Length: 71
Image (cartoon, rainbow, N blue to C red; front, side, top):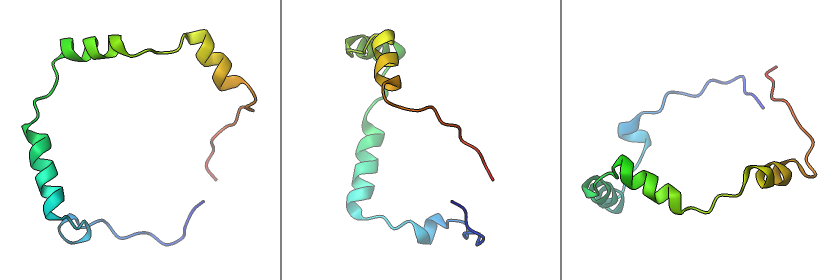
């Protein structure tokens, strides 16, 4: 899908309204410390990921391959 009309650039000061709740959420998120690499690896080790063969079977069953292209 394409459009002949070009959108105007987004003006963050006026085109992206924020509420007091948005600002409070941003402040809370800033206070949360980022995870270290060790914490990220430990977190990822606890996630039950499907086996590669199972993922292949699940994603290819009943789906025809497709290609993305631009006109």
